[in-house]
Amino acid sequence: MGPFLTMVFLFLIVGFLTTANTQFQGPLKETFLMKVGNLKNTFATLITFSWFLAYPVCGGVGSSWINKYGYKGTLIRGLWVMIAGLGLFFASSYFTVRFPDAAAVMGESIIPVGFFIFLLGSFVVGASATILQVVINPYLTACRVKGTQAIQRLAIGGTANSVGTTIAPYFVTGVVFGGLAMEDIQISQLMMPFLALMLTIAVVVFLLMRLSLPDIQGTRVEKGEKLEKSVWSFRHLTLGVCAIFCYVGVEVCIGANINLYAIERNCPSPALMATLYWGGMLVGRLVGSSLSKVSPRVQLVVTTVSAGVLALLAIIFNNPWLLTAVGLFHSIMWGAIFTLSVAHLGKYTSVASGVFMIGVVGGAILPLLQGVFADLLESWRWSWFIVLLGELFMLYYALVGSRVRQTAD
Image (tube, rainbow, N blue to C red):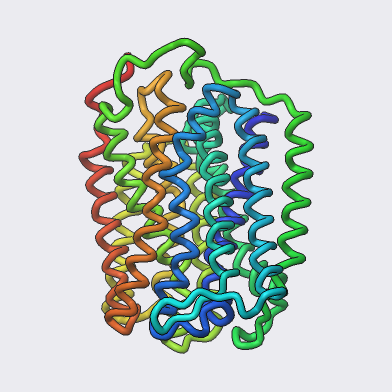
């Protein structure tokens, strides 16, 4: 039970930092990006893009570290990478305060150098989150907890992840920026919170080094052993990577961009919408952790249909509040897709987990693409068709693509 709870706690950290990162889009749009003209939405979504770009780049790193250092060694190294990334967040603020005139000129746009340092920090912390999830997902799937199935354990981990995502928007607006209005935010306010987070993660590393965290047998390649075939030869895994591309993309489209949509619609409390969305995911995962007799495939069918209907209604009525309810149905999609994707993979599981992370780049590409569309169309309303298309592909995966045609045996 101790190793299981450790993974659940680390999932909370990953969720918290992922959402906190996306919530910097609005404040940084008003500080770093005041002089970029009509490309504010595009530049703001680069923060999310740089974070999720780390997943396809570093997923293989996580897999190779597991095979070389084991699960515990990989976790510790991943957390040190996280500390380095948080240090870059601190440096972006410090550099901008010390050198306010240092900027890059791109046509009519003027972008402070500190913004690029922040983007680099976003990539590095995203790399850490990637490495941690390459460990967490197969560990939760393979470890044994009495009376649970794999998707339930992932839902419990996802619940902790959602606790982090739910509190993150108010951490950014309330703690980092002290509840100030967007126009009153100062970039210097970033420094102390990130130093505190670096110290917190260092304490987690110290504790983790003293915990017993056994490897899960049969889920990774032993030293000197070679795989007989490519992990991409498993069709249900390959399509699962495509499905997770869509899932993370549409999840982040709403979680990261709903506040920008709300601001455009002059809705009160944009941060509340993001919190309700992530809070809906928390409720959904709590419910999902109790569904011991409902198969992952059935869960994915029901949730994709429901989320797709809500996205369509939000477009028709031009109402961002409808999108907040999508979080309830996005809640268990990750666990369902991952469970279906790694089914019957045996010793290919740890490698598959790294490959699976490639699909998370959807969280970089789709929100950025949505930001570009919002600028071109001068409205966020029609850009939500991206979410609808993503839900339709995941429905296809649940019904057809997840059928296992080849096993590791």
